[in-house]
Image (cartoon, rainbow, N blue to C red):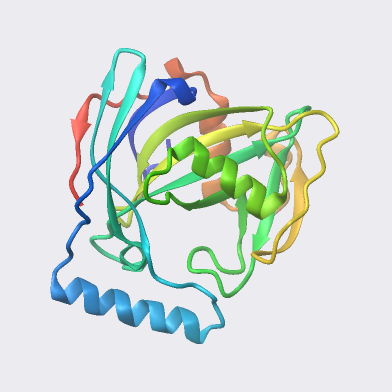
Length: 230
């Protein structure tokens, strides 16, 4: 995996192998974090974003039990994930493959909170309260690209340099499936199956992510059971 990311657990797991338990009590940030989140959210809105605050998932703990991944989730303010340091929250990101193995890439709109104006793979978003992470991936695929996957698996749990956590999935579309981008994208392209043939705008983190999910699990480090608190 990329040197600026920490692999916590490696799948793949299908939906039946990902067990999710939700805590009812929301995470309570301190006053400084709340004020910082308010300021970042205001700046985002000033850039023309329609973003509004609410609750999304934070990861309280996780563990691997045999062939299952167990996630303990808790509601937390969505805007806390916008902070540069000490970010809480766990997001779901899903790379998308065509039936012949090509990769769906989209150029993100400049008003978005993450990677504005840059190219990204597939779809991503916050996990809504009570939602299963693979449901999140299906929802984001429908909202961002108007498609449903033929196959979908959770590949890994990863910690990003910001401290935020990412559930990384991989979706395969049926042959002939057509994507329709939403307003979060300024354009899209199908990049070749071979990563070394990708265009210059495919920056290094995307190449590393694609190579990672293409490897068999035995070729990557496997995270031991552990826990994390926001």
